[in-house]
Length: 235
Image (tube, rainbow, N blue to C red; front, side):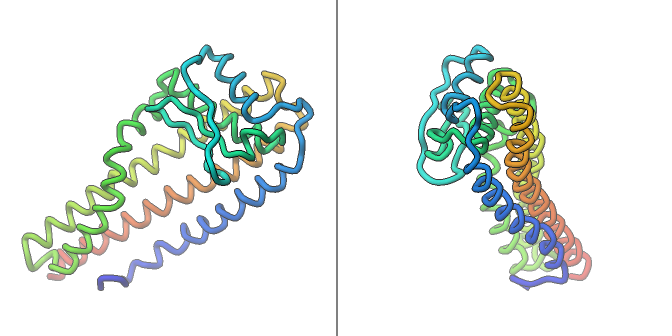
């Protein structure tokens, strides 16, 4: 009961989607990393021009180790790009750099879903870890046989629910950042109209990973709720 339940099958579809999304984003990035943008701009150049075009002067652009480790840190106001993106002049590099710059633009303009996600971030880390732990403790104690078990499982569901809400909010934030990225890349002349669909494929593949993560969290939460309901009723 601690490790298996009749509802484990709920996790299978999003798990398969997650594995596919991870493969898709890496293969698509690798494919278009070999296609040089006609503008000759690097990811760093594109990010810098996008920030300047929106009047953003207090965000630093830095190199971060690893592959596909690119991210924007709102608290430190730092846009961190992996070496392949920072120095790269490929269509993939420009697409990823513009996407992260899009997050900086969202932050600068106080894009509501991003503001909400940033506010929820501290609770999310706790909920994603402590939620399952409390749920399993309550499951072991018995939701219907002990008061402690009941409230431990309930607290676990609430905490994991907060982490799930974070995953849900993340999807529109990422989609909006990609939309801004494509618009800014084309309007700024960083990509031609013919190159834009290739960059869009890279960003669409990346968005798929966030969608898979959201579905995984939702199905896990549903599994917890169903187990909790069944134990409360049966015990």
